[in-house]
Length: 126
Image 1 (cartoon, rainbow, N blue to C red):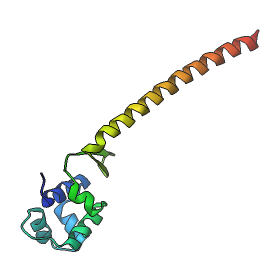
Image 2: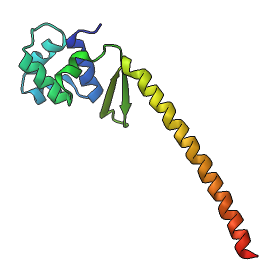
Image 3: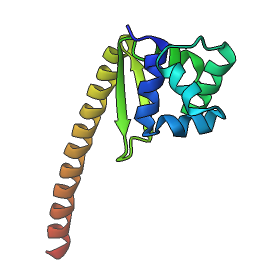
Image 4: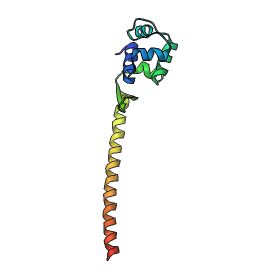
């Protein structure tokens, strides 16, 4: 189980930010921020909320990050981070299967409609 300071470090790294970037965003010294990431300082709730806000997530997401989560990264710069609780993963896989079936059905319908167009064009040309 990851400790909160490890979660903060991983989330910062996922954003592609240095410790200096993060410290600037939080309005604190780099050494002060580095102490947070190393777990060498007790962090007040208000600071944790501020860190979560800077990371673009809510406090609960920050505290639960890494707890059997699936993380999806989108974009070349990993600017979009989406995480799902492992309990939700089966539901997500089920929804993905449904989407794949819908796409397959759509492809079959398109193929059938193309065949109909060819038949109709032949009838018109006669």
